Every structure is written in C-alpha cells, then in structure tokens.
Length: 141
Image (cartoon, rainbow, N blue to C red; front, side):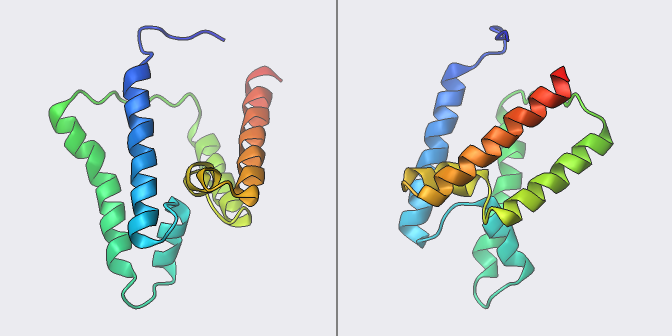
C-alpha cells in the first residue's frame, strides 16, 4: 500500500473529523438524538407529526454543503473504479446491512462509539471487517 503524498490532506481531514465530532455532539445535546443518516432518512419514510421539518432541513443542508463549498473552493471530482452494477449492488448491500445492524456508520461508528455503546462496537467491527474482506477479495482474489 502506498500513500499519494500529493493528494494526502491530513489537516483538512483533521478539521473535517473535528467538525463531524462537534456536529454529532451538538446534535445529541440539543435534540437528544443520534446523528445517524439512516435513522434520519428512515424517519421520513414513516413520518410522525412535527418530525418531518428538521429531517428535511438536515438532508437539504447535507446536499447544499458541497454545493456551497464549491463556490469558494475547487471541489475534486470523485473517481470510482467500479462498474455501475457493482456500485448498485454495493449500495443495496449497505442498505440491507444498515437495516440489520439498526444503524449506519455515522450512527454506530461516530455517535455509538463515542457513547461507549457495546452494540455499536460490535456493529462497527462487523461492517469494517466485512468491508476489509470484500475489498481484499475483489482486488486480490
């Protein structure tokens, strides 16, 4: 494994991680809810009275952030080294895993681990381990 030192961005990655941690902490302190994308989107599929507004606002902010960032900085174009069928299958598997695991990487990996949740530790180890195995299998076997 090699690191592309030209594209390596430790400072922006550190700032991004700090901002994600602060946003997660503020969200749970202010709203008493876990900042998990699958839970926020899932709540829109079966909406409760008075619960839709903040979820829609959150998702709009999530979509607007990169657009606004693009107005002040050069946004690199993403590069995915896979065919569309593989990408679609991967998305479906992530969705199924999120459903079975009762949460996603942001809910378990960021918020759950910071709360020292044993369930989130098992979930995070499971999805990270599965991801490592899949990438190894696809690239080397």
